[in-house]
Image 1 (cartoon, helix red, strand yellow):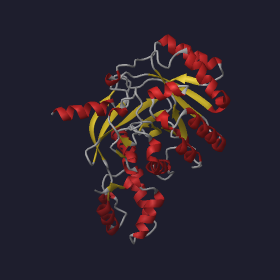
Image 2 (cartoon, helix red, strand yellow):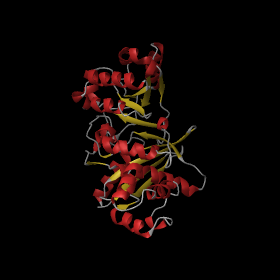
Image 3 (cartoon, rainbow, N blue to C red):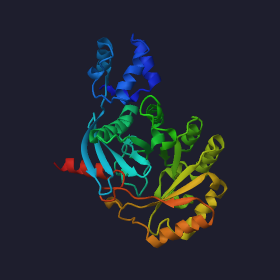
Image 4 (cartoon, rainbow, N blue to C red):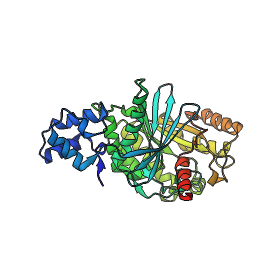
Length: 354
């Protein structure tokens, strides 16, 4: 099965063309057609010689995704369900913010991290996405925007969709290099955030990449007992290991880390947990930001519900009072299966029922 050419960085594309008897400058031409003109076939690359076009078509496809379902929220959020060439389904979300258009991308088919509150983990991981399939999500959304004729462009990316990005590290890094390339989509590194559930060794690897990509860590609990109960990954990487990797990251990069904290009613949303969290982060407070996230209920996880407004307020005020920078995430798409993985799960159930 041919892979998408979107999966090649400019250096990889250049090397491949030279190895296959083509001149070096062809890479820049192909790159321009892919990411500036955004063609959907190699035949459209009319300043690329026929031999090169045929060679590319023999080895690659351009579009790796097919749109299966598109849902649009009253607030303008659009959730796409894409079908991969092997029939698997993934989700991608386009969100509108005052500062620009942000896309949340998926990195794996399913998820093995096993967070007990999360919809994206309802279906186990079957495989990683290759870099072309991750880039393809951005290209599909950008072409959707192009079709509107308003000159809008994807300006921000969050790698927070289905799967654990650091469990697919090599493909993730190629994706980041492609979308950040100044002669292509040119999405600024500081406009991109990668979220991890806490794979400590990969956090250290990421610190060594010497890039300006933002890092977010899904924390969700301030102690090991509670975090292990709601996040199985904590058995492999308890808080001590996670925080050690955080210290390494801060030392090497001097860049701020965002800690994501989903507030679950009467589970992790008490003032006691807020106090513990403030203590855990106090020595890192100058480079820490806590993103408090109202929980999106999931039918299959009926044990959990959204924190009461007064509890969210008390949690927030406790952190602020202890000198921790924090905020409550603005919600998007609450009327269209907002929880990551919900649309995919429902579509698979629907198809099995047919």
